[in-house]
Length: 323
Image (cartoon, rainbow, N blue to C red; front, side, top):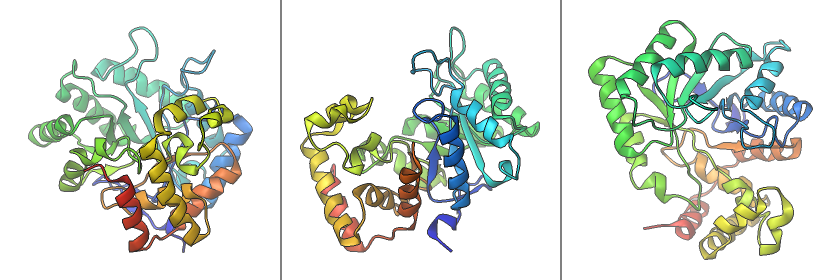
């Protein structure tokens, strides 16, 4: 049985997930319907089960209004064949979807979940996540709305994304004191280049409180695959200019060099090593990575099967250290 098939508990939710999650932000954007369906079929056939999307995907694309990713996933589920039963379906609420349609008020959550359920063509969301903290809405109001959805069977567990350590701790306290559902997962930014935002405070909270971690930007928007090594590589993709500006610096190149060295020992690409390093971190449940082709998906599957040595991890640790 491959590592990809060996499930891990997601917090205390009762959900069991493979150690890598498929990010679906590209569905309906850079991956059309046919490609998206092929990716989902291949992912589940390989043993992957956690797929992560959001209602806001992909409002940034010209002519899009949000819900494009959820809609394609819903069409895939509607084909039947046990597809819904093979996945742990995660989506999010809270980011702007239009005038007056954002945040974590009880009223908005009630409306937003129904819209997501319709698009996803399902009667339940396995992991419903607060996409952004909403400090204007009391935590108890947000958590109370989630409690209603869990009682109604529309949501199985809840998670948080983009929360600070202080706010995550506060939400856990409110849940415990008021008998409300608690965030069983956190979705933070984390990869070998950007370790500090998570490790400086959130990591300890998640380990101490038993909160699962499904980090985004696991491949640093493709930089950790080795695709962007020179300024002129910015033209290799629509987001290449932003990737080069953000990561093509002394730190990024040092991390990439360490990944290259480890990859050479395992005769594999550096992106595979980057994900394997994250999978092995004590606090990480399942990094999130996206694919727009079956070849890229094969790399994700291979990453979940790669076991690094202590020497490998130490080399990447040293190159990516921030303290």
